[in-house]
Length: 418
Image (tube, rainbow, N blue to C red; front, side):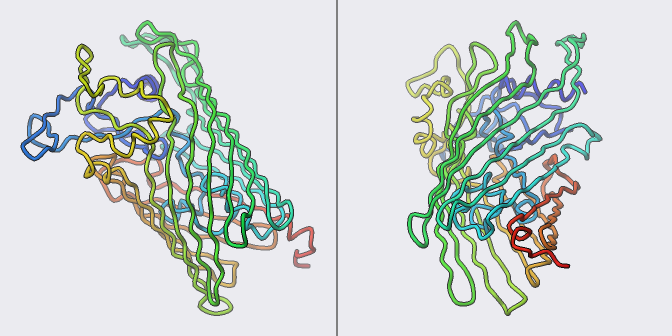
């Protein structure tokens, strides 16, 4: 319990810690280990690369507030290496790409997902729950709603001396609404608006600073190109997500939301009347300033690196493409890749697999994923399982998560088997 308390205090207040890599907390699109990079004095070598005093490359992960917004909540995409920007539309498009909803075939659909969190560490009260749904408004438009709830369980708060500060139940949630509309036969656009609430340690005091609940707002802007052809389908998506305000837990600290640029594509091949295969791939990049390798409060320097978090939000989105200390090579290291494969038999039984990759200096998340899907009448069930392939611990290590999908349009049309 003390470890969870320490994590909340340190991560969200941007106080970095290490525990000899015993434990790695991953929450969000980063979900990466917290290191001592902010306290490590990296130096630039003759090749323009930053290295530690012992000559190893400097890690430089990007840290944001409310990283739970980037956690993939869907067991279907979770089984496909977290790829989902261009996969076929379902209620979980609310997380990946709301503009896909304009191409949805069903009139009404709902989904519920439950993801245990940090079960490999013996924690049983930490989880992510996600509810989403959409309603078509004719052939060309749709609306969607979603609720994401992240519970961090019971926390015993302590001070630096280990003295009790009382108990709490930190939690975060996001409520989102979306509208999607076709702009042409093959192109659609979507807009999502989000309300974000993060109560991690409200009414507690850390290092003399009173902690309050963080509140913010954000928007997603998305586009989808969908083209059916004989024997298959091609879909491409472009998404700007979590574009919004900064969020604050204290009076003197404002942190960026995990704004993100994602592009994705998916090809579906109909092998025959009963068998089809989809290959999907996503590339994501956080639209957040890259931290400097050194923090010198007394002399921020002409580039203002010590005050990088003071960059205005809109400017930070554009600067994120060219602010890495090591230039273009480091910017490329900030890209994250997802690749997924999905096989359907008779549109009733699915087998899925995927792989996710993140550069070792930017978080080092690498894992294989597998899963199954079953459809029967109005009911669908998706399962996923994550297999890590690096020494980084993942909160979903060896954990089975599941999603339920309900297609009420089929029930309304009498599609239920007698």
